[in-house]
Length: 97
Length: 209
Length: 248
Image (cartoon, rainbow over all chains, first blue to last red; front, side, top):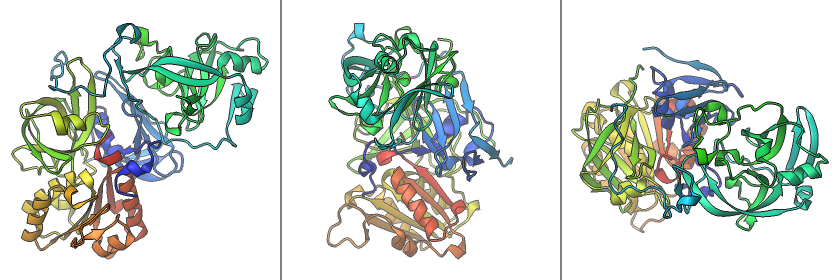
């Protein structure tokens, strides 16, 4: 397989990751939340939020655990409002600098 | 940028390949596309046909359930419809084959739906809510073929819901059943600010529209 | 890391440079640009005359000290935004831009090294920023760039990479061609695997920091392989570009 994901066979959406959600999330959080360590409510894996798999574009941002696929964060951002569902995340660990 | 300033136009940017608008067929704010863009809230589920089933449920009670061969043995209906995605693309004259909601009720031995609303549920955890009045009389199908071929996994195969008169997020991919519920409750996107009903002709994209 | 709320700013193209047959650098003037760290990205939003909008993310390829902000855009067949930016857009055209974004994929001299940078295709973009910054701020930090592309014609920033390599003994650059190579090609061939990584990656005992950027499948394969050869997962940072380099 080449490094071009053509070979991935087009029925699998090749996910982005939490880095690409940073712009949206920065509208809501005062800190760079992509650097937070987030605990998956499904399998308890702890990862930087940036390493979660991102789906749902362009309707919204759905961040999922790379290991068990559980949904940790769901977010929809429009010009003047955002919706955020963090129920799938067991915990967020943030460094305050 | 001030709130009332419009975004600068990027000269020469058009976006997806688009057909000239056929105004009477295209809801407000939509653009006709020749592509079939894929939007997904998660990785593509892959359910083997041997494991697949479709159910009508009410609470914990299973009212009816069909295996793949049983589902294929139900009366199949072919439709050609326009579909409209809330992300603004519309696709005209799409062709599908599947089983109407009316046929499912009949095959389940139900004179009518036991409640006024359903929550459609799918492999991968997706849900969407619909009024029963929008499913009956041929308005909704569970489809297994698109353009004369089995529905591809990326587009929701083996089976997806098809409710073309509402925004296409209501046409749940990878659908596995309909759960009859007493009151309208928000599904996956509806609980994040998308409209509970989703009529493209009234541009009901978001709650409050 | 405290971050400001980001407004959409207007970016104007001031220069265009074709890097390869399908990748192009855009130099931008952005009113009020607050500056960035090497490795960050921006969200780009295009608006058509009829109001239709599309949004994508692109890594900043210019270093923090550069006079102009530069983005690298790779043409994605059937893409919606990259065909416009690589084939239609010209000097003077404008679009909206939001940033800088993303503290996770940053590298600064304070992070130290040794550094292992692994890029696939247009995933070289954030590393161009990091390497330019490093050349000025911390040239002594042991760094190895492993860059995977399909053919020799697809190597983006080829001259610049060679220049940095010549000027800095602490920087090693390895290239691998995955699709085809001429008989006199002296670099690696084939996709990145554990054997190649063992050769370029310094010993794990030196606590290297790895960054991987490119198409999603490549990034996941490389990150998994690094972990399998002993890199602690916490020392591997990833940025997935989706299919074929375009973020979305």
